[in-house]
Structures are given as structure tokens and as C-alpha cells.
Image (cartoon, rainbow, N blue to C red; front, side):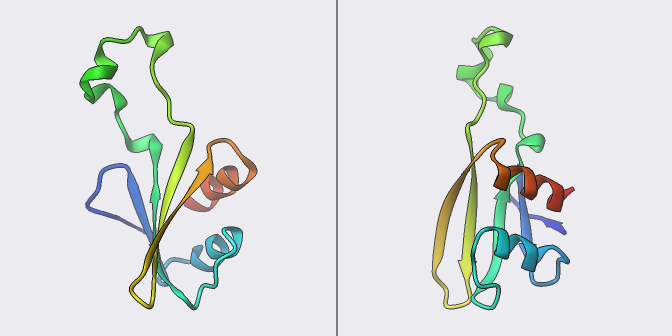
Length: 97
């Protein structure tokens, strides 16, 4: 699995063993998807943003959704949002290790 140029994201393509499983989980046709870009919050340091620096640790903002960008073989692109800690999100975390 490769990391994309964007911090805090992972690219999953046909070469990755979990590609078909992730497509099925998201109810996508793996034959029509070229690759997916999945936000990986564990690699993101939210304290680097100024507005977060002023918050108390117990008030720190935490994301509620994970964004997945889907790049199709026909050149189109779509974004879907997955609720964090939902069943789908937990399965994604298992696939991504």
C-alpha cells in the first residue's frame, strides 16, 4: 500500500490485496474504480492548525467523519463520508492495518 502525496491519506489501488474487499464494503464495482484515497486520521496532527492550538486538550476538535475519494476508470471522481467508529469505519481500519 502506498501513501499519497497528501498527509494523512492512503491510496488503495488494484495492486493492493484489500482493494476488492474495500470496494465491496463500500458497495462499489471494483472493475469501475481505478483507486481510492482514504483519510487516515492516525497520521494527522490536528494541533498544527492555529485554531486548535488555543483549545484546551479536553476541548480539542476531533473529526466525526472519514472522507474517501473514489477515482473511477472513466475519469470521474466522487467523495463519500463514513461516520468514524461506525461498522464500515471499523472494517476499513482492519483492512488498512
